Length: 221
Ligand SMILES: NC(=O)c1ccc[n+]([C@@H]2O[C@H](COP(=O)([O-])OP(=O)(O)OC[C@H]3O[C@@H](n4cnc5c(N)ncnc54)[C@H](OP(=O)(O)O)[C@@H]3O)[C@@H](O)[C@H]2O)c1
Image (tube, rainbow, N blue to C red; front, side, top):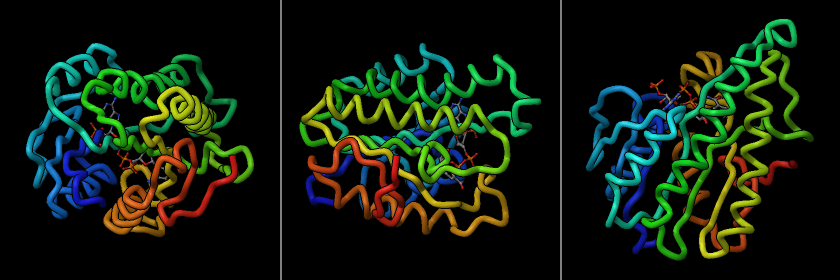
């Protein structure tokens, strides 16, 4: 990370990858704002704010709580899976909930935090290779999740077009041993977080709008 980049906000920091990202940033000396749906604490965090990514008012409340503060990095990590039962299990209600949490939620929070983002700030959207048309083969039948990450990726490209003074990234964290990734996953949350933070640290304005893995490899859209 650059020496001047010191203040970060991480969503979904109560468990899984978000918790590991917040801990790694705090361990590296960053002032970390952790957001959670439930109760804290988050080890190393300077402050913990409540944020339900499915509730637009919650994004506004986080923006209000951060008013006057500067952020050098925002990591929009929180997400949910949908029904994994394929078309047979597909429902409009589940689909809309996944889209609300995984797509609208990060966009609304980024909007609420825009006044905190100085030129050159970075916003990392934790996406998934499952949202890639070219590489996202996924046998488990979760239409909502795949579609939500594809939609998020498209939004990141549009945000990069619309906000040329920020660096916007869509990042695939690998297959990570969390509640979402399961016990058989390849990577610990700590290893994924370390890779993602290295990647984010290296990324510059020329990378805005890119879709990259935790190891820095481009993901085909
Ligand atoms: N694990 C993998 O293998 C993998 C692979 C590709 C991409 N990803 C992506 O990596 C990110 C982190 O995943 P993970 O593996 O850490 O998942 P996880 O273990 O299921 O944790 C999900 C996190 O999101 C939060 N969250 C869920 N719904 C929320 C809401 N409505 N409002 C606020 N927070 C909410 C959870 O908070 P609560 O404790 O309140 O539920 C939790 O902190 C996600 O974007 C996921 O799509 C993961």
